[in-house]
Every structure is written in C-alpha cells, then in structure tokens.
Length: 240
Ligand SMILES: [Zn+2]
Image 1 (cartoon, rainbow, N blue to C red):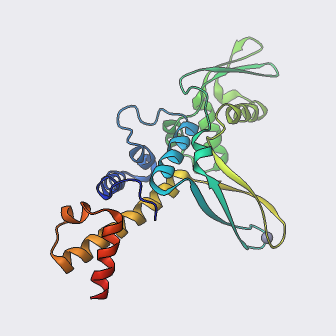
Image 2: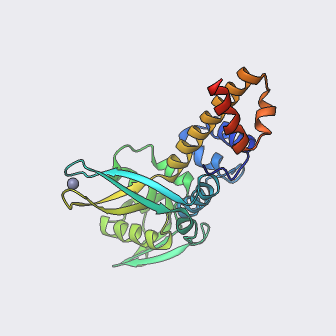
Image 3: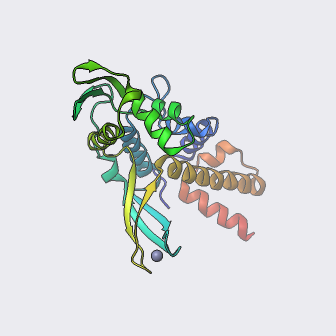
C-alpha cells in the first residue's frame, strides 16, 4: 500500500475537505485559503495530480464505459505527466482576432466556473463562462458587449483557451475493446482525489477503532504507529 504521508496528516486533510461543499473542496484539498479560486483550471488540475502522486502514487487506474455497447474499458493516467502540464499565467490577458472582432480575454479560474454553474444548460454555462473572461471586445474598432459576440467568435475563444491552458479539462481518448467505438472520457481529478482520500480516511478510522477496542490504545497511540506496524496489529487483533 502506498502511504507517503502520516495518518494524522491524511485525517487532517480529510477533515478539512469534508467541511467544504463540493464546489470548494478542491481548494480545501490543495490547502488554498485566501486567494483560492484564482488559479487557472489547468494549474489546479496540475496541483491535484501532484497531490494524488504524493498521497496515492503516480498511476491513476480509471474505468469508463463504452457509450455504444456499455462494455467496461480500463485505462490509466500518469499523475506526474499531468502535474507537469504548464498553464499560461492566470492574471495575464490575451488577444484574439476573429473576423472583425478583436477580443481581449483572460483564462477561466475556479471562481468563474462556480459563478457560471448557476446555468444548468451546458450551452448557457459555456457562454456565461466565456463572457466572464472577456475583458474587452470590439467589432470593426467599435466596443461591443461580450454578450453580443457571435457563436463563431466564442468557439474560437474557447479553442484558444484550451491551447493556453491544456490541463483545464483532462480527458482520455478511448477505443472500446468490444465494438471499437471511440469516445472521450473526462476525468474529474478533484473527485478522484477526494474519493480516494475518503476511502483511506475511513480505513484508518476503522483501524483506530479496531485497535482501541482490542488493546485500549488511544487514537494518538494508533497514529504514532507506522502503517506497516498498524496493519500488523490490526491483523493480530482480527485473529484473536
Ligand atoms: Zn463498445
């Protein structure tokens, strides 16, 4: 088993993240207090991948289902590769020309996603997110509101953002082992790290419970044990 950090650290991290709603849980996992939500989505994913590598190892074992025949497809990702993906500066502004439109924009950050997620419709969500990131735009030299940008300009903007922040959304191109269909499986790193952390914390609490009952040890006593010794005592407690 991979336990690069102490049980106490793991439980503290779990407790801190548990206290947060899902929207800000990634920030809690990354220990971002003040100024949270201001990193680009790619930066945040890179840091979540680094956290996964530290806590659970570099390899991500993932599972998706073929949308055509529902067959299971197992695949893997490398956290160290994801952690090394570099984003453009969150605060920097960029320019894009599409036809007569000149758009000045910045990259989306977590706060933008949270604000735009009021829109349940996927297209409205995408438009709201993009509009929030437009700093200024003109058409043939005349200032226009971001809400007046044509769809083609928004599409171009979205593609440009993807180039500037390649890890903003992580997905894997898969081929079905049964029917050879192709699809793209998105990966929610915050969700993966949170689920694994929750499972690890629950296992740890069960160990504390078992050892406290068997030997009368306190939580602090159990936490002072190395993972190897803890596992050995749990095994003995179960056998007795
Ligand atoms: Zn299939």
